Image (cartoon, rainbow, N blue to C red):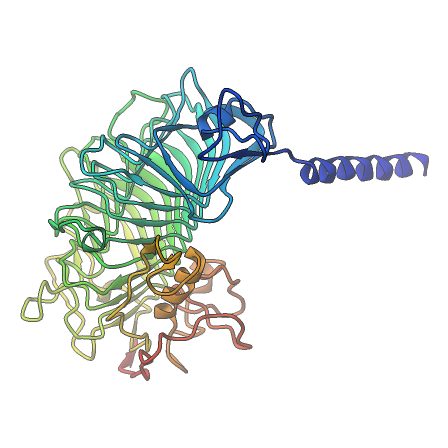
Length: 505
């Protein structure tokens, strides 16, 4: 009994110490009128830069960055076992700008481990900027890890990617951010030769005109997962990557690129493997042609489940492109479960209303194994495209559902870009999460939709696009209808569509 009592008291003591550490985590301050030489990080005497703060604070601290514009590079440095958080005191009111890379986390001799950045507006300062807005580089030996980017507006790279994560990083979390406007043949996020990366709850779109820029229709994928440096670092191939609960819309890029692409550089190994893409919403609300929403070039063990692709999405292929590039091995074990592919206009996969519809671009012999099971297909009442010259057709789905899911058509969307002068997003949202919830309304099926309770439960995601648990018989697609209602979004005003049933096969 004494041993049991001692154990309980010890556990209580440890819990008390932990709660005290959390409650008394030191808070430091950075402000535009601060000083790195005379400041001490207090609210009365703040520092001037985040870089200085990070080499001056103890583990477990919080750095609050006051509103204003901070020009120059922010260097994320330090090893923090308990983690530190650097956050904008007022969300989106601390603006980080530079005419080169704005934020860096470089491994090697200056490790960056255990750092969270939250609530910032981060972008290049103008058209003459150097490459990349944010660069997380593991130095080849995993010395940049345990880094989180949360609730930031990441936009307007004038040179290359918005966010590059490469060179043997691990445990990187990109959560609840908004991305728009990269430059040239580059991406919103380039995930290159890394492990354990989660990209979740983000909004991705482009709106060059809104930034006073020209849309040259030459940008690349929103998310790219690959390995271009062979064995120059610890890893060959990017692996254990999760892309979940994101919203992709308003394509303004090249007709050779994708919302999400795995593999690009034609290497003789699998550039991406052990990858999960689930509960994403991909919207066709633009007249610009996309290659296909999802693509794989030299990947294996990839699961694409409970995603919703909806709208008049001009494309070379409406669902997928699976092919080899250069010396790539054939794609292997590519799995598609419980997805919705719906074009309400009846032009599924056509580059224009007069073009030829196309479901997939999957050349014979370039994908060695795949599964297509329990997905929903709808082409506005027109036939689902079928092409015997492709490896994958909708008829390869033995439990396919050909019926109208009753999704609202994604047309006339107000893009939720940040309006700095007004202090809110253009759609009226106050936060990124508010904008996300509004857009998630385009994933809500109609009343009595045929996708409700019809998913393959054995291969369904455990939650939906809003993070709500799926229970009982799950629904097909990104959104789970909860019988008792709740805080789920309604279809956007005026966009509700009564479902039409065609065929249940």
